[in-house]
Length: 296
Image 1 (cartoon, rainbow, N blue to C red):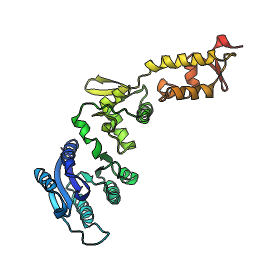
Image 2 (cartoon, one colour):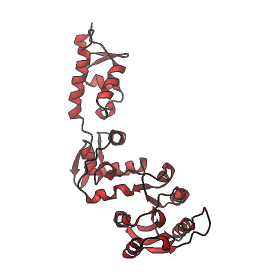
Image 3 (cartoon, rainbow, N blue to C red):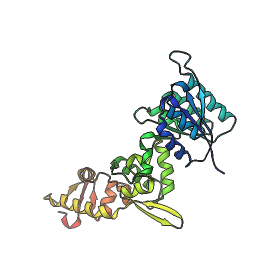
Image 4 (tube, rainbow, N blue to C red):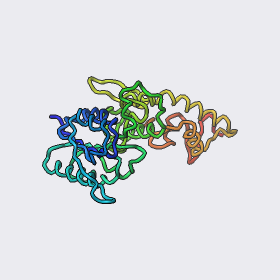
């Protein structure tokens, strides 16, 4: 059974040009059963009204009757709570960049609803973003309709994905769908489109992870083979530069972390760095490591 979706738009803070993308986004979550937009209808552009009519989004006209108070926001909040009380929707799309809707999102989540916030990345506060189950930004909607972007994903998201795979699997392999679920739980505004990829699968491949199908399930795995050889060479060069052939474990770890930005010994199956060195055939003693043939 499809999830029932309620769409509530703060029209005074949302441009009509985003409506097509919002409706498209909703289709990924369920069936739209309630759609309303709020504001002083007389102040909205003809294009806004035309777009609302196209998608049968019901106008909820409200004059701003008091200075410093937004009556439209108040009505939108009351209507949303009423929809929840009457059990008319399972998922609520709150479309606004206004942080005043933070308490509403928190209360809806407390009552078991899924809350999808949509707003402008430059205006949304961290509290509002994190009060929602998920948060999406207008700026990245058009990635769905473009070829893969040349936006370069930052190192932080790669490290985050690696850590999730390491912490939630025994063999550095995780279901792609499971990875997506955890990313959303950890980062409510995670969206592959922010990193120039139309979906999670293309993002992880762009980041250097391997994907494969097993029956009908797609998996993602950490690719350790390519950089392990380079790390071995780097360690050997470090030891060769030391007359005694004995290296400092803390120093080599720092050097490796500087050169290989996403290095994590855990993705090679080692619980700590000294164990990683042992796996490579080195002997460790305290904070010193060496090859047996170099021991003096």
